[in-house]
Length: 304
Image 1 (cartoon, one colour):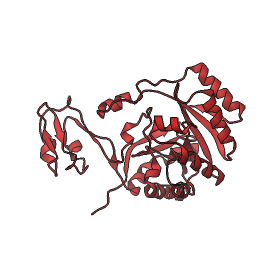
Image 2 (cartoon, rainbow, N blue to C red):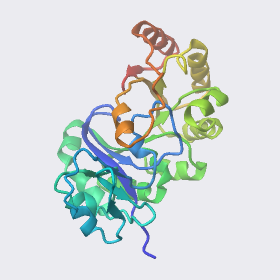
Image 3 (cartoon, helix red, strand yellow):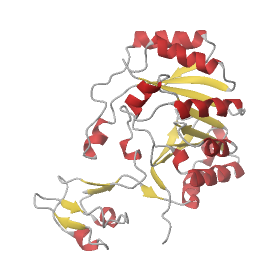
Image 4 (cartoon, one colour):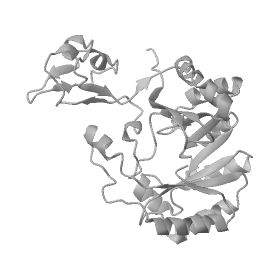
């Protein structure tokens, strides 16, 4: 059986908060975490998911006729039903729909296709010293694809950043690190139980991998999502600083205050939004956190 290509869900050009200078950010599909504040729910699953916007459907039946697997049928209440067991993710429904009622949450791509997109922005990298950031989801879930892209960028002398949750086998992380110039590494909570409660996994592997990565001599910038009442208390911030204090090569810390802009995405995907009761810390408290981090000697920014 022919192996399916890797999956992406977005390419963001002229990115200013995903590493140094102007960057192209490639978003990999699939993530081992399920953070309540995630604003990219379309990146959680490795699979391509299809969304039917029933209010747009004009009932023409073009998608039903064009489906090679007969996975689509007219719904009794209007719109189109999809048989997920028959769907092969070919995307013809999206291409054939004149009313744009079908949308896909991602696409499959090979290395050559992604490199062609990256190379369109070479003038920006050459002028500003920027480069490419591989994000997600979690890029380490597709390590062979990631490594191939990193090596191709290396051959072209493009600066390479990997934005990661850190939840992957250590061997995978270190293999990727050998082809990476900078890591943006998420640090969400120091308490394992609280981490499990809000992200779906504990933090044992994440912390161990961060320590190994730094001690192996790789450059890391820490990213802390700040959620009021979840991880913004001073005890947790100071515990993070104490942990980082034992590690070399931590270049700085980015604070990412919670926002709810992903709410509409959950709605479109037909999912409940798990961050409904969450909020960002107020500005005064964020300033306090900034002071704690600066006193510890780390450069700090808000928003990357």
